[in-house]
Image (cartoon, rainbow, N blue to C red; front, top):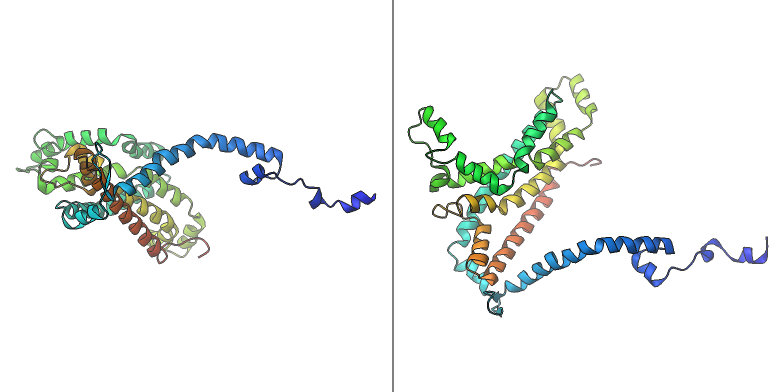
Length: 323
């Protein structure tokens, strides 16, 4: 072995990465080349994220402190939009309360209904694939088409639902979407019907199939009933999935818009005037972009607050492997 071989250690023989390589996190020329191609392919998505999401988000944050009617430049007015929302807008608190009431009705129904369907499909009975497809079909229908279909079904005079009720002897069936007393319930039913059996059910089904069967076999040997297995094994093991679906369901409920806008446009008599409808009306119907932006940021803060509360509360009831 020569003198040079003893002096040059493997660490010193390794080439020093260039500035470009360090920027892309590479060590060699090949890794740098591959990393650059990777960034090049990701560039359209990154630009889209910046211009179509990041830019509007920052713009709406600024517009929330301005009086902006599109045709004239925005005028900075400080917190006036937020003061108007909390103290001077007659539709702000009712629309927010109506959205919370919808959330209270929608979320438990969607979660329990989707979990029940997932439990049925997890029994490995004959025809499971067919029923899994059948239950998922409503989720594939566009929300507007689904709402139009339900408007025909719930039509007070000619709809099949009231026709069945009259045949059963109900002299005065509900007006459903046409009356103030039942409009909110009707919109909730449509949304629950669309939600149960969709992605929420599939996520529950994946969670159920991830529970080791050995737990159920051991419980059967101990003589546990089906209810005891569900309460002591299924629910704890499924708690991370329940938590995930719960967060998504609450966010979706607080953003309810399409069904109410297509079916009732917030009526009758503001019975389905949800908070997002109020934002849409102020921003795109009345062209008060500044005030609409302020309302949107209030909703964003509410969504973040609800999510943080759920994350904090999940420490007490969500079970993870290794806990």
